[in-house]
Image (tube, rainbow, N blue to C red; front, side, top):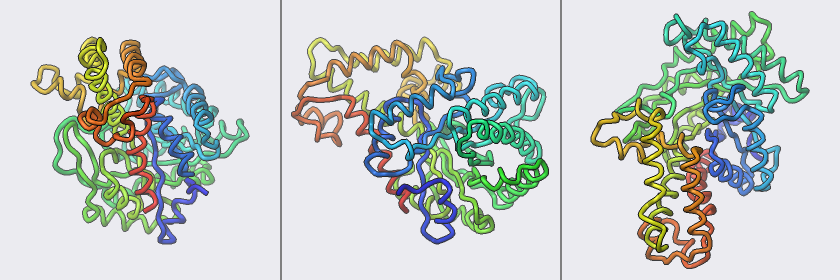
Amino acid sequence: MPVTLDQLASLRRAGTPQGITSVCSAHPIVLRAALRHGRETGATVLVEATCNQVNHQGGYTGMQPHDFAALVQGIAREEGCPPEQVVLGGDHLGPNPWRDRPAQEAMADAERMVEAYVAAGFRKLHLDASMGCAGEPPALDDEATARRAVRLAWVAERAARAAEGPMPVYIIGTEVPPPGGADHALDHIAPTTAEAARTTIAVHREVFQSQGLSDAFDRVIGLVVQPGVEFGNRNVIPYDRAKAQNLIGMLGEEPGLVFEAHSTDYQGTGPLRELVQDGFALLKVGPELTFVLREALYALDLIASDLVPGYGERPLFQAMESVMLAEPGHWNRHYDPGGPDARTLRHYSLSDRIRYYWATPEAQAAVERLLGTLKGQQVPLPLLWQHMPAGTQFAETPLDPQEVLVWRVGQSLTAYHRACLA
């Protein structure tokens, strides 16, 4: 039986910690890889959408919560992943997409978004109302954050009862790395202090109880903290458990909770396993999965360029460069557009801003042409050694390029799965 969300704290208390990977992506190939991995391993498949990515107004993906749920459920059926293994989560649910508006307006939309998430079947909800709205400080204090979180919890509770389904479980806390990673090289990042974590829990518990939501607070399963991990455009800060000892020790005061760690991308199995052993039972990953997907797509682009007459010289790469230059909004605040390394970062940065462009018509057409060109081709072993040396099992046999992509994403998911077994 797969480990479930409500078992994580008891496993930690018993001295047998395990973890769950949280897949934070809307890319169909990534979702397919996650759901296939779940079918093959029997592990819980936790898939999460963020408030900017998916909301009642469409988000940047154009999907409302019911659309995202239908996408995941449809792929799960195709992959034969049992529905009881699949959990849908909402990340950073709060007013962030509307924070340029007055707080009451932004919170009203946040409430509508949470209601839509719960109605669509999302049952793991990260309540994050920490950001200031128009005329407010950029970050709110614990009291204001908790009071707004309770407003959202009331909506979630009501929507779950109306749907006559399971009641939600909640994640609180907001001390996380910048979404998608930092924009500059890093050499260290400090873990959350134990005192800050205690205060966040205590204030939320008090406000939930004062508003008649003690039962909902009993379903808070995790706290978002910064364990001291991060990635920038060019480098990764690995987990150093020695620096997080005070924070780890504080978790012993809260028998019903585990930690949720964001931006664990690129850590590798060793550091991820240490995170799980130390109580960081929920490991969020997103950019790494689309980074390795892009890596595989570009390798196939090179293979097709070398193998198939008339395909051209890296047309997928050229198409992605063109669309990113034509629509720079997703990357030009993260990389200096005039810098000498801007072209390299557009394609290869660890923050993987290119992931925002795969749904454009130009990118989809280029990917479809690539996959169609290589479908059924027999790729010589030396060519795979040159461009995808880990994929030699695909040599000298009719190629299914989509299977190559799913396999490559699955390699990263396997590293997480091994770590979650601690």
